[in-house]
Image (tube, rainbow, N blue to C red; front, side, top):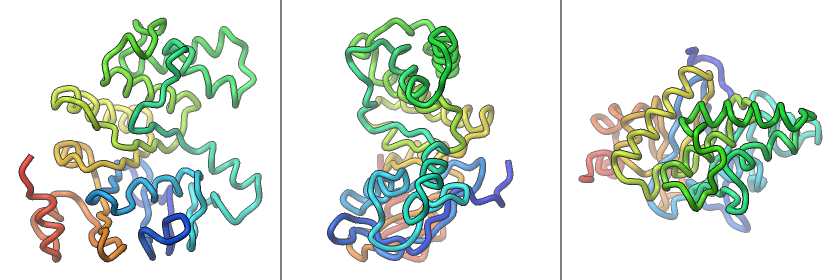
Amino acid sequence: MRMTDAVITVAGVDAGYEHPVVRGISFEVFAGEVFVILGGSGCGKSTLLKHMIGLNPPLAGEIRLMGDRLFGGSQEERSRALRRFGVTYQSGALFGSMTLLENVCLPLEAFTDLPREARHLVAEMKLELVGLKAYAGYFPADISGGMKKRAAIARAMALDPRILFLDEPSAGLDPVTSAELDRLILRLRDTQGVTVVMVTHELASIFAVADRCIMLDKQTQRLIASGAPAELRAHAELPAVRAFFNREG
């Protein structure tokens, strides 16, 4: 794992819609790390993530994925950037009328010319990767919340992305299931070479998986801390940062 190659560069970004929610955000994410974006409710975590996956253009600044701009460049450059990553959403966002296999096949149908048999084979491999091959024919309503999260990760991995964005992956899960998901995230990083960017406020997951994290602050609209979780818990300059990492629960 090399921590010297930046696969994501966020430079001077104002994140928001009509008005900024966070201002002047700059950081890099390095190849092969698990990077966490955290902060209190309403601080702009999910808003920043939406800019990083190309759903909304930043109000100022620039975002690059492996050197390619998501906004401000050519359509070809944006298309390359969009192909660099997979993403899962807090709800899982699986299509209820489709089996898990059909859900995972969707990106393959949209972005490849593979025949049906090959698409199904790849989808089965991705479901096996997250421990769900035996459930390929099940519908989302037939499986648990933790299994839905894993199925969503399988779909996000369908095109072998270099970067995996996870929005609140542990939300709504019990501690045991959340820990299983943490182990899956680390296994994907270690075996697939994927760089992981997570939005979460779950302390257990942050300490279990994060190499580095940044913390956003609602009041100042700024990035107020950056570093390894253990370092921030022990040595952060701002009391609010230390309080976040030392809170109960």
